[in-house]
Length: 341
Image (cartoon, rainbow, N blue to C red; front, side, top):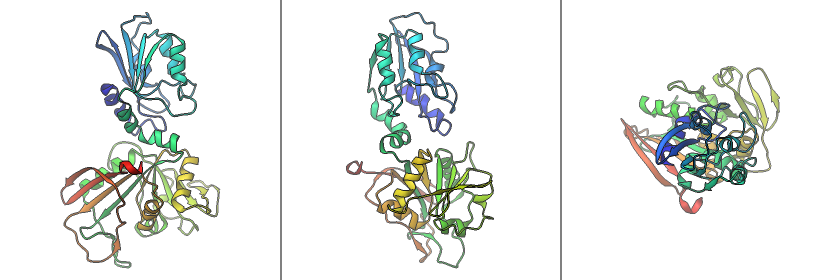
């Protein structure tokens, strides 16, 4: 199963909204086939693992797969049917698929065909790998990552009217772009878009760019800004307009619930499984205040001090998962502590 997880991770950033899945076919403790879901809309992991298999009903063959095989027709036929066709004697599964069209149905198909099924092998590790997928289907909201860069004395932007403050270094910037390619969407607020005029794309690493989400509640932003250049899908979350233009989709958000909840609700409606929130401060704080977040990633320039500016959000109770030093920058990954899960 560890090998399944290792293989599955190769599909990161390429298979969403499908989950990451790896599969390994074993005979007499020797791997005779393996594969992973490589790209959305293409063959699933089980297809690759079984590609060279002969459907001979050999009792010594076991298929290991990190997530329950699908049982429905989507972009591809059901993998459970394929496994039955290949007459695999035993299937070992990391965890059940929470998607309504699968959840337990793939396992039922296998057992109905006389296949021995073992469940929940390295289940926590398999769930963690697909945290975005599980969060979306179980909590009915996207997986939410809050990210900001701050100075050594705790500021994320310069004092109003003094120009843009560059905090993170080139190494950190490249890593941030790799984060962008791994998420379904990237979100920034009105003031951040207006003052910084960002592109909100992945330009520094190979891979795709996320959907650009722009929070502009009262539609104040001018259309000459970079996020409206049509180069990437852009959705404006607002309170006034619904519809589409050549370059932009407009989506009205609810006004009867907290802002962060309204954004999460919109993302679920738009089928966006994850969102990287890049600012500004008030927007980040709205997610923290509403307790709607899964990860927080902070880049701290350990040498830069400004003495004034826009204060960074206060870190809520969180568990430090990892930290690395990249030149002058200390990067820290935080997750929700166990008592808040």
